[in-house]
Length: 66
Image (cartoon, rainbow, N blue to C red; front, side, top):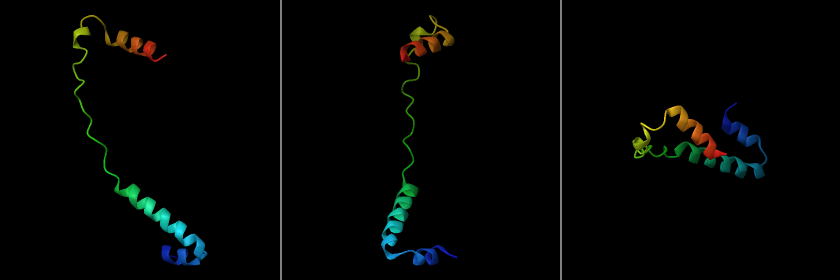
């Protein structure tokens, strides 16, 4: 049984709900892809390159999150 036949079997008051849901799915399918990731932060901490290891920076970041 196709979708049209199934919808016809629903009570008339549910037809609007089906239509709303289909509209929602269409909007969801049309969503624009996300923005491109900016990489302008690269090199932002290069002055700390010789002072800290990556492991030390990871540990410090975890401290800051708490």
